[in-house]
Image (cartoon, rainbow, N blue to C red; front, side, top):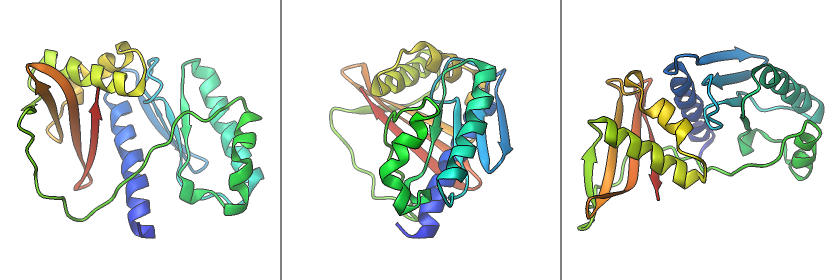
Length: 203
């Protein structure tokens, strides 16, 4: 991807998480020290996140930002994670990145791949998969449960957010894929700043 596409991909991820947190009754979104903090006010690990908004120059700068994030999280006493885009990491620092985080008690969790595009591929149809727009509580729970299964996490924190009426605003579109009436996949699209952010999950 080009630098502009990489930036767009990273920014959309931050924007989506900010939306998630803003729909939670006790959620908050903060920006400080070139960090964006999205907090659900629940035990949902994925929503409770800290993002680096700009590349850092050296180990000392990164460590300072990690400490700011940890200080915030300690006051909440809820599970959380910190998201760092690989393109923001100086090449010389990559080999010791895990060590820098470990000094603050943090360890690698998972790796995500971002995508940015100007044009979508043509729609394809799978004969056994019946895709239905989310329109009731049962389907919201299916979205939550498939999210949880794909992340190997318990469903309760995901249901807590995805069952909320305020989550499903006019700019959010959900779909559940069924095979023989069993939910097996899901997709959520968010329209943020006139750009679509798209997530898919399977179980």
